[in-house]
Image (cartoon, rainbow, N blue to C red; front, side):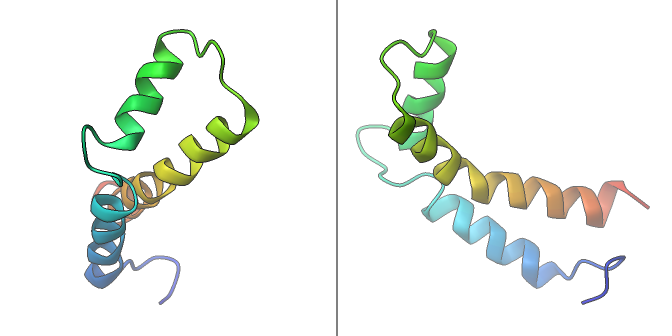
Length: 75
């Protein structure tokens, strides 16, 4: 894969990772939603592990948005 060409397979893989790892655990709400609420609420009581957890669950979404940007927006 050259730098100027992003295959659709990479976007599909990033989408699957985002919907599984990025949202897990799913119940009672997606984990990343709770972490984002916590940060937007001031993040009181957050520890280093909570920040790592937020980054870990956000990474598939960041990769997916980057691949979409490279394929469809930046031309």
